[in-house]
Length: 99
Image 1 (cartoon, rainbow, N blue to C red):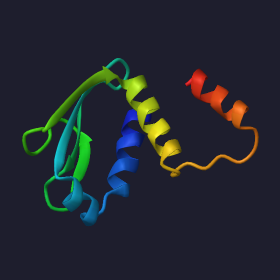
Image 2: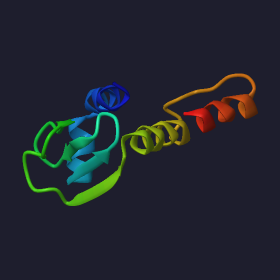
Image 3: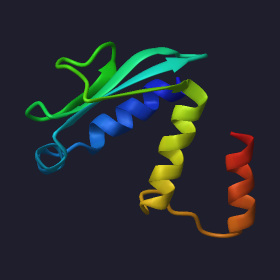
């Protein structure tokens, strides 16, 4: 699913340095397809991300649709330079509207 894949990518992008500098736990209460509770733990050694309640109390709880969650992380990846686009930028942005 797009949500599970997004969390897989987040888990793969974690580093001890990022966990040490962030020190926060985020809980996402998602509605719609692949809804439910998901988390990103950037406080516990090594960090983790996945489905269910976080292993320690969340510092931030965000509620949104699963589609909006995937869009938010896609946009963040694009804005941070993690996603590169070569070619027609207007056309690329039209794909984001469809998603």
